[in-house]
Each structure stands twice: as structure tokens, then as C-alpha cells.
Length: 479
Image 1 (tube, rainbow, N blue to C red):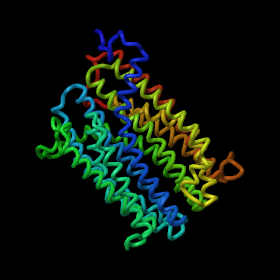
Image 2 (cartoon, rainbow, N blue to C red):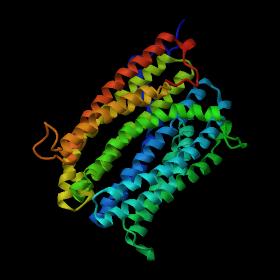
Image 3 (cartoon, rainbow, N blue to C red):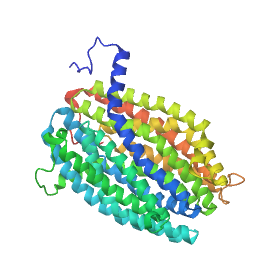
């Protein structure tokens, strides 16, 4: 059986690559701007809290460590909507999209409520840590307040995946930019007590974050209602009760992605908890490096989201040749851009740290961590782009295993050895490397994840090429 080619055979390889890069970038750049705006909210929280006091910065950092683990895991769980809708769009089965979105929203409400409970339970860890009382209070209140936004965040991610899979990425960009402005304004009011508002310090960041997430959900609903691009797949033309089989299908695909996201995000966030007993300087330095590296990470992440859509649509159309070609080009583009970002971070690490804080010890420690962050840019870009392409194939369990092994099997244990240097180990550094030791371990973990995922993508795409379009997995398949 002859497989359909993604482009005419007479088209040169360079022209095909340039065409795919253009198509991928057309989807990715609005996602990138929106993601940068979302991370910009966290950057603004850290920067503005840091100029209030070191205690406010440390409290926000610790509270964010719990918050980010829950939010990133939630984002992964809700990502099952993206490939499901993309496959239907590629197959031209637009009439099946509204059902997926409606059931995805029911799933979002349930998972968001569970996340609310888990986040508040997670905040109990601060009661068992050796923290300054002011830092502990800010961290606990940060989690309690922001947890009320979790159901809204889950539903927003459903609509996000639906819109992106329809090739509509500009709405999320515009709404995220508006939310960034709103967040900075609310921070200015509530952290410093301007215009007669109470001076809440770091707790003001929590209130601003909660309001902005609800704003995102409302803003995207408002946009969708008015844009013609959603009319043929409009999911709110009628009420639909939860459908157990469909919700379970979305959970089966989404839960492994959520665990994958949890494995990586927790490896980063738990470092803040593990180095907390070294003092506010180490916690603050880690948070600065994490915030900026997260900002840079938005480039390959945005390409990955666009790549998931492109690969999913190709497979829905029965074109595994195009799916593999798009995967290859997308991963190569992400890695190429990572080389540039790594170089810039390594050269300007001290300048970047100075943008966050005027505390000399914190800035010095953060600069060292930023240099280490530069080292893992290439492997980080490779693993996120590759895993996104694999999700386009509706494969989620094998990437989950690779991430668990890389981060929990290698990165965190090695980080504890280097960062904490426990006395009972026969081999350990003479002195704990503190946060720096954990970041060295993250370089190792990300490299292992990238290599494993590249091998997996070759296997998955090769299997689809061998089977051909007539034997491709059903739209509901999960592996």
C-alpha cells in the first residue's frame, strides 16, 4: 500500500523543511507569547516580593513550590484533550469534537476539586520544616489562597487544548498578555499597599494569582463565544451529563502525562524544600534560577504544544510519513534554539541574577545556578519537544516511565548526595554543595530523559510507518 506523502515528491527537502518550520512557528509563536506572559506572572511575583523583603521572597518561593507541582501536574492530566481533538480534526470528524470538550470540562471540574484538596494537604509540610515563622506563614497562606483557582485552571486547560488543536492559538496569547498586566497591577496594589489597599507582602502575590487564573478562564470563554472559528465545533450548544466511558478514556490518556509532568516539576520544586534549612539565601537563589530557566523553557514547550497538534493532525489524516517528518523537524528546531539560549544564559548569568535582586549573596548564588541551568538547555529542549511529539501519537505511558526513572531514579537521589552530603553515605562531598548540587543532578536527569525519549520516538514513529495508515491505532488508543 502506498503511503500518502505530506508534500509533492518534487518538492526539495530544504523547501519541505522550511515549509514545516513556517507552519510549526505559525502555531507556536502565539503559544510562546502566551506562555511567556504566564511565566512572566511568576517572575513578577518573585521580583516584586523580593523587593518587599527576603522573607517575603522565601515565603512566595516555598508556597510556589507546592503550587507549581500541583498546577503542572494538573496541566499534564488535562492535556489528553489536545491529541484527542487534533486526531479528530485531522480526520475531518469535527462533529465529534464538542463531545470531547464537554466531557473534558467535567473531567476538569473533578480533577480540579481533587487538586484543591491535595494542594492544601501539601501545605501541611511547612509545619514540619525548620522555617522562620514569617516565611512559614506566607508560604501556607500562598497555597491556601491560590488553591481556590485550581478548578478554574483545569477547565481553562481543556479549552486551551481545544483551541490549540483547532489551530487557534492567538486567543490564549492575547488573554495571557492581559492577565500579565492585571497580575502586575494587583501585585503593586497588594504587595506594597498602594492606593489604600492593605500591605500584604508576599501574600498579595497569591491573591493576584488567583484572580488572574479565573480571568483567563472567563476571557477565553468570552473570546470563543465571539470568534467564528469555533462555530462548527461549538461545545456549549447543549447540556451534556458526564459520560463515564469518555471521562475514563481522557483520564487514561491524561494521567500518565500528569505523572510525567509531576516527575519533572517535583524534581525542581522539591529542591526548594530540601535546601530550605540552608537559609533564605539558598531558597531565594534557587527560585530566581528556576524562574528564569522556566521563562527560557517556554520556547521549546511552546514548540512542543504546536508539534503535538501537527503530529496529531497528520496521524488523524492517516499520514504517518508526515507525522514522522514533522516530529523530526520540530525536535531539531527546538534543539537549535536551545543552543542559542544556553549560550546567552552562560554569558549573562550575573546580569540576569541582578535583575531579580539587589541582595549580593542571593545574586551571587543565583548566578552560579543559572550557569548550571545553561548546561541543560539542550537536553531540556530535546526532552520536551520529543515527549510532545510522542503524545501526538497518543502514547503517554512509556514517556511517563522514562521521566520517573530520569528524575526520581537519578536526579533526586544524586541531588541529595551532592546537595545534602548525608554523613551516613560512604561516598559524599566533603561539604554539602547545597542548591548547586541539586542543579548538577538535574543536568544528569534531563540528559537521561532526552536520550530515552529520542529512542522512544524513533520506535513509535517507525512502528506507525511499518503498519501504514490502514493499521494505525484507533482514535481512543492509549499506550
